[in-house]
Length: 274
Image 1 (cartoon, rainbow, N blue to C red):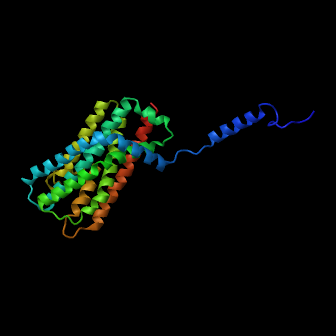
Image 2 (image 1 turned 30 degrees about the vertical axis):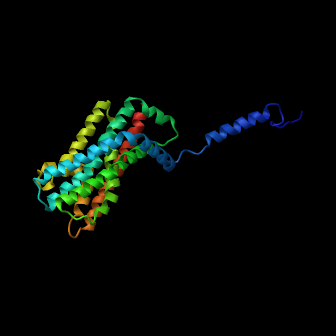
Image 3 (image 1 turned 90 degrees about the vertical axis):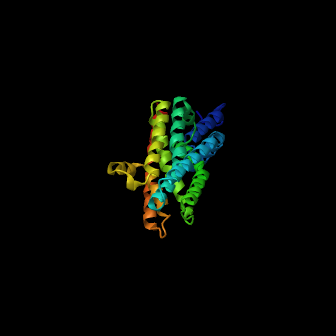
C-alpha cells in the first residue's frame, strides 16, 4: 500500500483550496474602527446634507431670535455672556440632540438598524459616525450666532476661537445623549418627544442666566451636558479669562461626551439584537 498526497488525488487540490479559503475567511481581519467611522461619517453627511440644511437655518434663526428678545431684558455683564454662550450652544443642541434622537428613533422603528447590523462595521463607528455628521452641521450656525450675539451685546470677539473646542466637545456630549434617547425609546414618537424635551432643557437652563435660577434648578443645570460648554464659552468674554476654569469646563464636557457616546453605543447594540 502506498501513501499518495491528497493534492495528487482527483479533487484533492480543490478540497485543499476550499479548506484554505475557509481558514482564511475565519482568520480574516476585522473591520477597524477608524476606517469604518470615516465611511459612516461620509455616508451620513451626504445623505443628511440636503434635508438638514433648512433645519440648521431654523436652529440659527431661533437662537438669534432668543438673543434679540433677551436684549430687552439683559443689558450686559455676566448675564449677557450667559445669553450669548447659551444661544450659541443651543444650535448644537437643536441638531445634535433633537434631530439625532429623531433619526435613531425612526431608524429603529423602520428596521434600518438591521442594515447596519449586517455590515462589518463596529457599533461604535455607527454611533460616532452619525453623531459626527450631525454635529458638523452645527458649525456655521454656531459661529454666526456667536458673532451676532457679540455684536448685539457689545462683547469682545477676541476669543471666539475657543469654539473650535466647544463645538466638538458639546456636540459629542449632546449627540451621544440624543442617540441614546432615540435608541432606547420604544417608539419613534417618544424619541421625538424626548429630543424636544432635551432641547427645551438646553434652552431654559443654558440661555437663562444661572444667577436668576432657584437652587434646585441650578442642580438640574449641572446635570445637563451642554452646561459645561456654555460655561467655558461664557468665561472667555471676560477681560482676563481664567483659562484654568475654561479648560476645566471643557475637560468635564469632554468626559461627559465620552460617557454619553459609550451609553449610545451600548444602546445601539441592545437595539440591534432585538
